[in-house]
Image 1 (cartoon, each protein chain N blue to C red):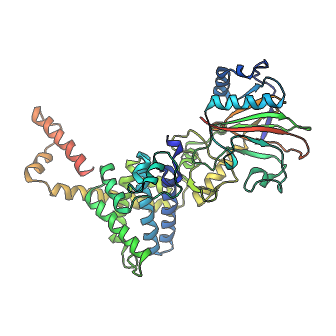
Image 2 (image 1 turned 90 degrees about the vertical axis):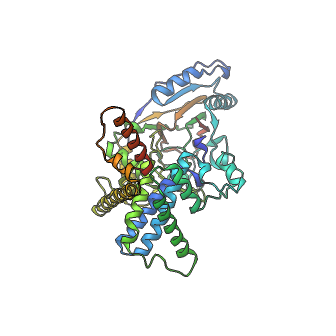
Image 3 (image 1 turned 60 degrees about the vertical axis):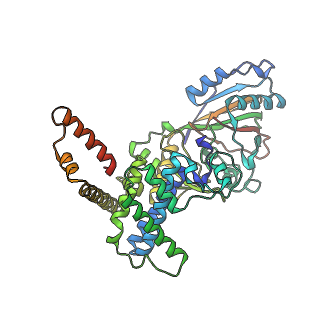
Length: 240
Length: 229
């Protein structure tokens, strides 16, 4: 996958008052490109946490992450330190491939809100790609809507498809989506080939910045990181 | 809210699982293991029927005598042990939801479901003695009726797209052909069961002159709904 730096940031000027987060600006940017970046009141951790909460609550209901946690702190982890069947368990400190968050739920969450508490040194970028830009042919779209796939989630596993009938989101995370037949294998091959041809946008966050991702429109990943870099993000997942 | 549906009674998950099961059925047919073909096919039919009901509303597939399951269908997760309806209730409900799901189709689905129960829960081998000609065409006919109601097709269900293996494409074409023949046969039987005057009226050319012609067209339309064509 190619990548481009995304230095253009849609900052809301830091005012020291996180209640000033402008829902309309948030909505416009999310609408136009599927993500937006917002500055918290300050780079201090308390302001970041408050801003993440305010933004998440303005977007919808909490979706709950691992073990139902509303708030999760993300840090680079080695394979040994990672939760089983997580991206880090497979890729460790290497680049985490783009995926749709909560692909193992019947409906993935609508938004991912990431608040940067520490970008780390050296820092690494969060990456995003827009799946509708992948150029799926009508036959490929039909295949993605029809081919059954196993969605692994322990006792809550189920069968589904990469695209629902209305095509409102994509379901893709190599850690939990598996083909069960020839049709499914073809669907997964199409997905991997098309997604790998996309140019990723790189989001190098600074302390105090919030990145909001429309999870139904974009897949996201992370570049390779160092375990001792100190990178720390606060994450909240939101139903639309 | 549709997005909060419990997995066990999700229309999408039931539909996808029915595709996996009919895929297993077709694999058993290709291996000439015809009793297992019928077993997987019967399971796929039941899942497909439940998918059709669940798409309308998840409460249609939960056991109405189990209040916890009803709560789950209403979006209140009070248990993870959701009880679903029996095959008998499923096919009774489909008869109300799917216009083409007529009494003949209903009886066929109950029969295959009872054979499945006997196969799984007794020492009997009811599938072993069944010839393909005795059930396969009616099976595709029933599936076709449900799939059309769901605004999809046998080809989609079986995965018979342009890139599919030739055998799957051929099986899907044969299934579709069998479904059409059964549909014609069902219409023929229904027509033969009408009173003579009704048959003569329906046999008149469409769009006849004047009020009488319009009345015949209305009757024709009404009758087409009744016989499910």
